Image 1 (cartoon, rainbow, N blue to C red):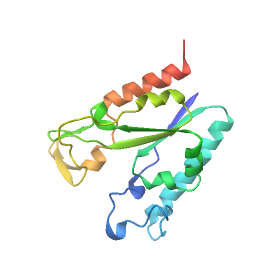
Image 2 (image 1 turned 90 degrees about the horizontal axis):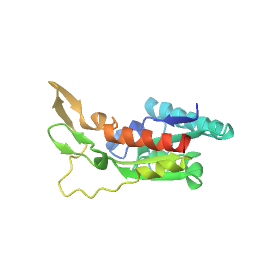
Image 3 (image 1 turned 180 degrees about the horizontal axis):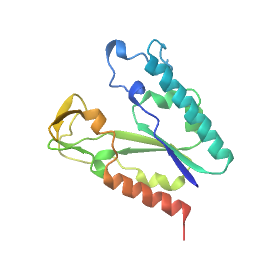
Length: 173
């Protein structure tokens, strides 16, 4: 193993949460701990930071992905790592992210990593058409599906580009 990717769940850190469901803010990324999901999410992020530090001690590459607007990036421990690693921003519409039958969705995303080749994922949206907003549900294969949950899947083009960049880093010749 030379590279580990961490996909720490973003749901509790989402800027899309409204009202009482949103207990986190930029000034209080830990939340008020009144929701069990916030306590669980905090534990997952702390464990992610521990894993990242371990991987670095072992000389291994790592990456952590979350939406660009996620409050996870202000979490204690991750904010310090962010200051001295690569913070790669990209819009997933550039890799074909879409809601079937509705159109492209921007889904601005960030990766924190120690792998320089992943800088090759940097893309900013230059689309001229309107993007689908990731709110509400849509009918997919006869079932109602959350747009945000569906958009949590990486588009195939993103996966292929990501894999190629990892391969380039690990096997440069």
